Image (cartoon, rainbow, N blue to C red; front, side, top):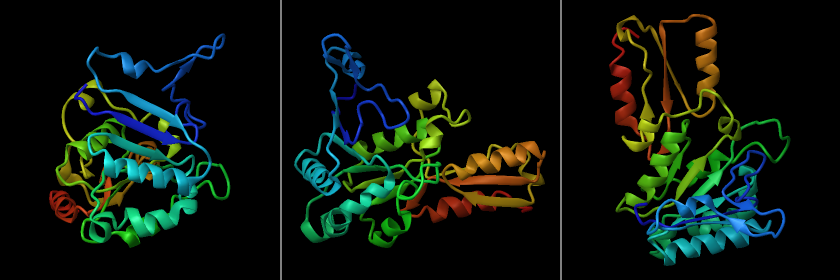
Length: 260
């Protein structure tokens, strides 16, 4: 609605892999496709979900070039599993991570990398977070792990609203798509912004004795354990952005728990 087109490319991106997305409806009688998000308003920008072939290096390379040449479009490449970025590592190392410094080619490419042990077995668990963090330097890209739908929305919106164009890596556990606690209200979508760090909403900060720093889906495991065991003296802080590392924001939140 703000005039920013969206291009979503990946293996099974239209339907969604193992967790239904319904970006594209298909008429079972004639095969015609219908994309509901393209019919919100008459003068809106369009979204283009594309099911790509299983050739990560070729597809990611193309989407990288697309983002470089079309700065007004939100270009997203989605790996079916985060591990599949392995097959495109040369593109990531030699072009995407060093896009501006080495090639003078600013871009806002988004890479969605499903990450975390979700019961799918070998080569379907880790998006190799450590590889991306090793590549991080001089604010060359952004690496995140959002834990709520509103956080994810504001993260994508920030990517296109920012004056500084740089790639965005999103670790995205598939289990959170179905997790009952990983939800956001309508108001959280309509207002606010992406939070690099999320403080605990615990009411009595002066009673907190322990502060836990965590990120991603592990937060919900810790939250469940705290609730089941009626633990009231422990705060759980979520780091939603790994790089650039929000050190000052983390320290400020920790200092607010004076008795911890």
